[in-house]
Length: 116
Length: 112
Image (tube, rainbow over the protein chains, first blue to last red):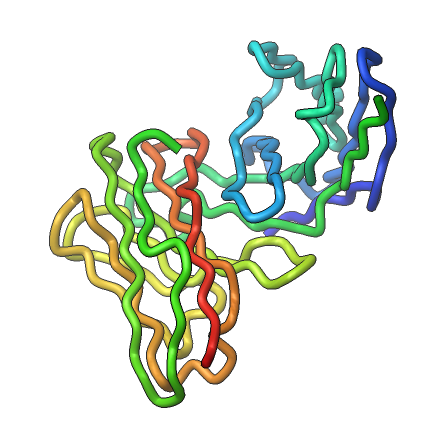
């Protein structure tokens, strides 16, 4: 499975934008880039995903490099509720008869601390 | 998460005992997954199922068993063969393709 590299931790102030980087130099052409976040004692929460183009949703934006070897999750205005562990994950598509079954391989993630 | 129910929230196992964790969904998703999370670590895949009556081993299947008799249910049994079962167990569901997985609230299993 292709791996991702993220900083162990990042800090931000409330109301400021946050850019969370992720390197994935061994990404394959069919891997989707997924971001999840997890609060203590809760299941991970889906944030955003993309394949080639930049993506926006109500939670965040995902900027994908042209060569797809890196991506950045952008929280436009951090709040205290955004403090969590953020995981950048490469997900292969589910293929009929294939073996990937679209599984997620979680790394250590980035611990985001948001200061009031 | 709405549509996924894991129970119980906390579970205690005695030595040599099998225990079963429940995962139910009402979103009609085909794929279901079980993950294990140890403190300070990411999630690791135990088993997954794409359709009823079919499931595949993940990365750490030893000491675990599953069944998928109904589309909405994917129970996980932690057997006595699993020597280090204390962990946070998470169930997830997904539609096909590269679509996201949605997770339940988890079950925390401890040994008495």
